[in-house]
Image (tube, rainbow, N blue to C red):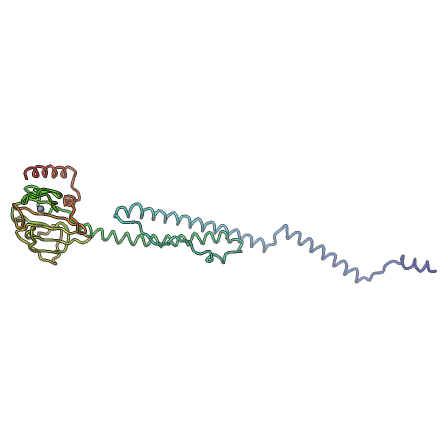
Amino acid sequence: MQHNTKESIFKRPRRRSKGYVIAYSLVVTLFIATAINLTVSYLVDTPKISKIKQENLRLESQYQILNEKIASAELLLSDIAHRDKHVYRPLLGIDTLNIPNVYAEYNDSKYADFKGDIYADIIEHSWRRLDHLTRSIYYSSRALDDTQDMAENKEEFSTVIPAIWPIDRTKLRSVSSLYGMRKHPKYGVWRKHEGVDLSAPKGTAVYATGNAVVSFSGWKPGYGYLIELNHGFGYKTRYGHLSKRHVSRGDSVTRGQVIGDVGNTGVSLGSHLHYEVRYRGNTVNPIYYFNKDMSPESYLELMEQLETTDKAN
Ligand SMILES: [Zn+2]
């Protein structure tokens, strides 16, 4: 009996309710479906994912285009900077503009927000390039302002700088004395001659050699009647031994204007104009300021003439 009882316990078929079977099948089906779904979605994008991926690709290519545009702007700016440095500035004789730290990189904290982003590298790189570009634009715009100022002054400079003969060359008898060391014609001692002596008949018109303001008009020992012009930019000219003065201190004169007449006043041995060019307080050789376009031939001619007159003295 006991045996039978045991048998009945083990061999009795398991009786499951219909509901249990349905629930069990559902769980299994769901499990399989989820597994398939996960596998498929891992291997194949859902429409949403694929849209995001496409969007990312589009953004990346736009970044690429942006970087190319930055590159062409950089190229354009470097061309402008080159012309500023190697063409305009040497032409105007001005130094390269110096703005301290203009190209110093920004602190890394400025770009900290991009950290952690999967596109951090390209975004940060582009930002840095744009920042550098902004600084370059700032520098170039300042440099351009600077160059423009100088160019405007240069125009003024070209009108004020002593650049013509102070007398009509057809009236010139000779260049009786050069700039530099010479034996003084009257005192017989060696001393520096601070200008050039242009022999011409008394009364010959004396011209202002550049636009200027009269800074002196009167008697000065040695010079006799003297006119001094202040041209600005560090330049002054002196016209000595005059017989007459036609301008007064403070008058504005223009290049070629008659300011006085050749004479023989002061320490002078004959009717001539003593002409001086001074730059920042020191005399310079006026020969270099007679004519911007003086040819080598006329320069040599002048030197020969001076040599003959020097021997005569
Ligand atoms: Zn002299």
